[in-house]
Length: 296
Image (cartoon, rainbow, N blue to C red; front, top):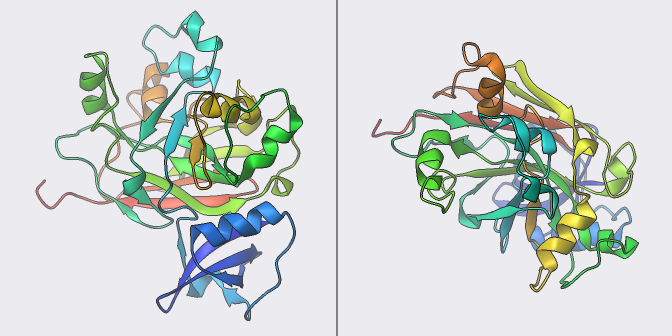
């Protein structure tokens, strides 16, 4: 299933997305969407199908209790560093940072860079959404995957110049990430993917800037399985429905990495007017436009 939140004449609905149609299946917001996803069966319609051309999709999860964003792709951990190496500690356990759940953007929402940046970047990521409260899960237990309601696309927008200066102080990222995180366009359950191998769904990932393909990779190349990511987040802690866990950037999945790997002359930082599209097979396309700051 692919489930979405819609705004229809000011009314918030949950809809089943099939082809180019949105089939209303419930009233309500992200809690209703998660509840339907966790049932693992096709819901009954409550209204006539709507054309996707006539509705506004909202972020499937617009106010997550928390957002943890991992760095779980080895290629990105290596190629985003100037020395093109991976610290041995990276392999010991997955690492993440917390970002701001109050600045979520949805499909087709504009994104405004933070003041002072000249190095705005996108990040091509997947994310899972937690559907059941849990703690201290076992990554080797197959039932650990059952707490995942579904998957979506995540764009972890980054102001690289601000982020770099912050992290020299041994803390962060802070304001270099604090301004926007895009999520959408839908929540896709596991049956939407080509398959799953050892906790790793199979899907091609691509990023386009103004229609030109800049980044591409495979979701199944993730080093840590989703069971490992969920279990690690739950260790000595508590996950609740709506929590978002980002995969981190797929290899080649950001401008920083492309520039580090020799494309500095052709992969410029994002500017006002640029349209960024992130696509993952089985989920769809998450599209956002960069807009200028009024005080720029």
